[in-house]
Amino acid sequence: MLKQPMIEKLAAMRLLGMADALKPQEQDPSARELSFLERFGLLVDQQWNWRENQALS
Image (cartoon, rainbow, N blue to C red):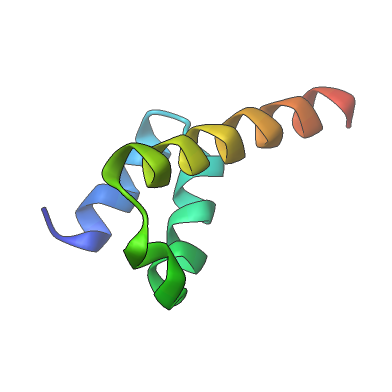
């Protein structure tokens, strides 16, 4: 899947925290050394934190 359609789908599903976290992950060379589950876990954690912060705002 291409990057832009994936980000658009994440936004459509209201997973903006994941979409925001994907960009820095792509630019971080050390992230490439992580397994799929580790990287996915980081994205899920970022989404969780994003929603918690939105609830507090």
